[in-house]
Image (cartoon, rainbow, N blue to C red; front, top):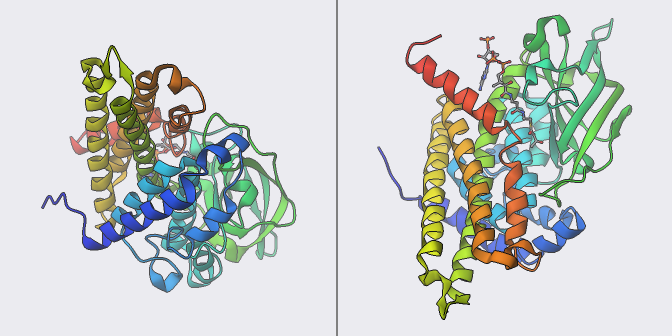
Length: 387
Ligand code: CAA
């Protein structure tokens, strides 16, 4: 069945997120970006609205909506402030989701419920200074103590979104380096914790109001009860978490692309050249047409991946396609938006230079475009019965 209509509940979530985003985020996003200021007060208001645990069941403190609702909410938040979209996506997709799927009752009680309510903030520690795309090559270790009561973690995690502001971390570390990716285990722990140093804020090209840092583990003791799943399950937990995360980033890219498109449309109707609004010029019309078409295609791919996730069937390929297409579209749209604005697109007085900078990260984090192409290729070859 193909149904292009949102349900009443999904429309309600979208309208709620849009109203919040336009009131609480859009008027301030440019200043937060300029000052690289984490929007703590606005994020605190998102918890009670259910935006920090959109698809987490209400039993665990979430809003209990579906993944399509998460997508429409992410698009609205990111259209107003991409940095807030990043903060929200990491909390929902990368920390709530793995604890929901792989955590035991005690872990859900302790970590998931407060995160889903927005009382605590999550981060996801997978990448390291020496490995990003090759996630299975983790050097960070978690050695089991002789009495088997706890792990001792050593190593450095890199580019950790929310790191400086997080209260909870989903961590990946090797409990058996000889086994490569099969030796990686997942943990969930609180911050601050003895032995863990949060590095300096990274100075970034875009999404400047979201915080990013290293996490340096120096003999950090984690009780065995902090392990998510079994020893050696970590790589698969990371990969399946990223499948869901990629839907969130596709939705974020949609939001950024839409904001750049809508700004272009408005500007084209107002700006005059050669005695008429530039929207009458075919050169501009073609750009607007390409932007609108890319956005619709990206949204359909993203909805499909979200619907498959809710049906609890494997959606690895579809999530990769959605993220790949939506992120490259966001960059292309923001790039053309600057062209529509001309000189005005290159200065901070108008929003499109921010959208251009913000869009770029969606082609990199949660798997670069090259990794998405790899994942898609592996899956289409498998579907054809190849190796
Ligand atoms: N779900 C479940 N299991 C999966 C899986 C998935 N999506 N993908 C792979 N696996 C399983 C495989 O089935 C395989 O299992 P078996 O050994 O039992 O057969 C195992 O994992 C290893 O799979 P591969 O051989 O395919 O693994 P690989 O080492 O070749 O890596 C990769 C595959 C796609 C390149 C992967 O490393 C990858 O996705 N890399 C990108 C990492 C990434 O996205 N990093 C983003 C960092 S997080 C971030 O950005 C957060 C932030 O702050 C915003």
